[in-house]
Length: 458
Image (tube, rainbow, N blue to C red; front, side, top):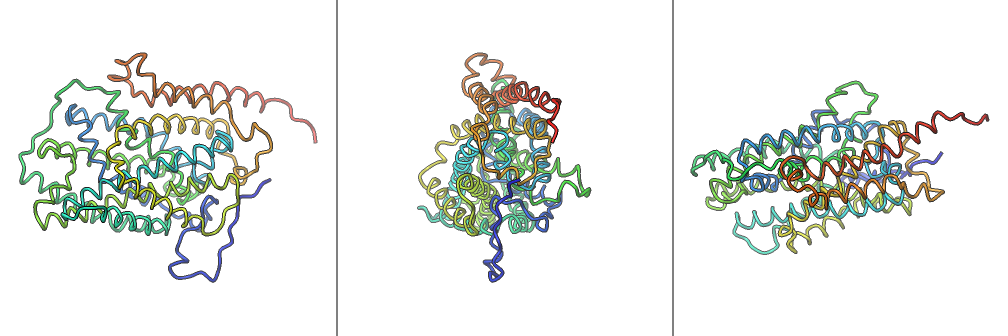
């Protein structure tokens, strides 16, 4: 049996360097698996409470506030089970999702997805950094790229210390964030003429839900196990069921509240970015700047951290890890993401979100089928690091083909039945379900037959 890579800690490293996270792609040691359901909920609540999240209110503005709220609830119901299963996956085997994907897609397939998602997460990092930079420049009246680099450096510094200190940071700054945005909401309602936004066009449920799930819960889902690998093991009965709901509740509560704030801000001021109100008054500007900075750091830490881990998964395909590769990769990804922000990734947000949903949702759904019905949640951690010996180990063709079909539907399916996928069904979710069904019909019967076949005697 193959053993997972081991990095021996240097007992001579202490102080601040001793707190830098270097676990990389290894199984998280039991001593570090202490996160409770409440702490996990706060992590995802703060990660989802981005300075960009109110943009949902602008993207769905023409549907009105009531239909937007219903669409958010429906999106939560769609993403509840996938996010819950990934939460349990990390507790059952303390590995990041893309290491587990080696059994679903083959080692080469997992490598390609690792490379792709490294840049997807770096894109999110750049997108959120751009929003923060533009907002803080407007509030402080300091132009140029200064704020892009300030925010970028702060985020990199925080992520260097890993999930232990990220959780502390989220927990102890959550109240400050809530106070800042609460006071900005008070400013909005006290100084502007605010009315409940009503619909100005017929509700398109398929379009609205597609925007929400690709902006929030299903875009986060495959990253959930990257956090839950630090949670209490599945064998620990404390809060057993709560871990299943913690990620989706945290993510969607933020989307619900900040989506409302964005929609009301759009109606009253013509801009979804509530924090820009602080540009017109010194005191409110300070409050807005603090809130924006915290919101962006909360979210982008959870973009940069998975981007680093995904890159390490790709590197581990061909080489053994070294102790300091995680902090080195964090710095490199943070610099590249900040450069993306300066170069104007914010101008391409719509296309970026479309690509995310088209790829991540089929990938996620196939992984869940494989984890539950093929691996049956029993694959030991060491098996994911076994060196492939055959082409079949490098590529899982059922998963690759099923993913390709789901991706094809997600991109071009709207041309077949445009009314259905615009007004009723979210097209990326349909593509993901079709890919999962194809994979299940292809692989589950063969696996069952193999398990029932008589085994040769020793």
